[in-house]
Length: 409
Ligand SMILES: Nc1nc2c(c(=O)[nH]1)N[C@H]1C(S)=C(S)[C@@H](COP(=O)(O)O)O[C@H]1N2
Ligand SMILES: [Mo]
Image 1 (cartoon, protein in one colour):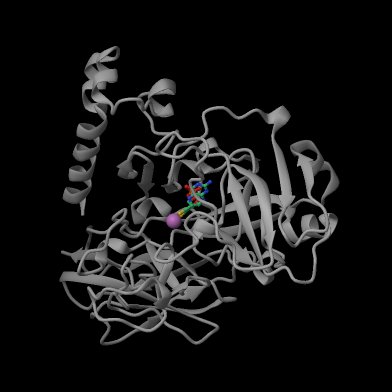
Image 2: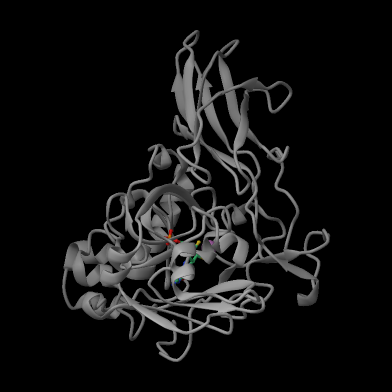
């Protein structure tokens, strides 16, 4: 694991020229970067990436895609510096707060309406929830045959506290028609080609999801302004669905009388085969279904994989579990590759779509090498598989059990 991480870092240093930066600082940087592309991070603070913890793993730097190793997700509420970044395009370069507006339009609104940030904050009740955001491709690295895209391991997931107004309150204020079936988002990020007419991503959610209490138009994260890279100043948050529906840098919403047809709505993006397929099989787009609820999953965040402990000392393990359904009902652990399972203590979530913390005291029978596995079950009766589940062309929805290595000596 460590070896892999170092490899990733070296790869990153080579790609961006940050390695030579430490020694050189100056004109040299320009030559190290792809033409016409200056990441904000290099302009602002060359030593850090959007203020991220230095042990986060860069999967891609154009656009920025960065994940957290499991042990850095140990906090009950994910702080900004340990939160994964998934960008499909370039972070907006200028945010004009005074003139930032949100427009609600589409076939299914009675009349278009535009709100300023100030109006959104003043006019509507503010709600706060702890909400999991998990990339649909989290865990992609484990699919075989390999699938294209960021090779996420386990850390493209977060659970921060998001505050803002309810989307449903906003829709009520605008007035929507009874034929509304979907809400699509529009955002201010820039296409990789730098063509301002091209949308980077414009996904959305069915109207029932839009109407849920926890679906927010957020303007704060963890009690302060949303960090730029996570969508400042305004973001749609619809937890329980792949995080790709939670549009950052939100500028408009389209209330649609059909399934939204924005950028990256059409299969194969964020879609899986409607019927299971053989690994590696070609799947026609018309046989793919858009991903909605995310499956039950868990992560061991303590100890860090590779821990060495003394014989006859119980080990306290802990982590989080989450589901796109209502609640996680059970988390178990195994130290014998699933031959036997024991219960973990599981806390209630702060609210629906928050992750739930679990812990256990593990006794190891004798010295040697162990793997500690965790397995969560949710209220729909589904349990995490131990193996990588159903292969799909884009490598989505891998909710296989997480495991860590422990040596008892
Ligand atoms: N405007 C915009 N919103 C976006 C994206 C994007 O590229 N542009 N990426 C989506 C995807 S695929 C994910 S997984 C989440 C990642 O959120 P984060 O970077 O705040 O962790 O944002 C979603 N919202
Ligand atoms: Mo994503």
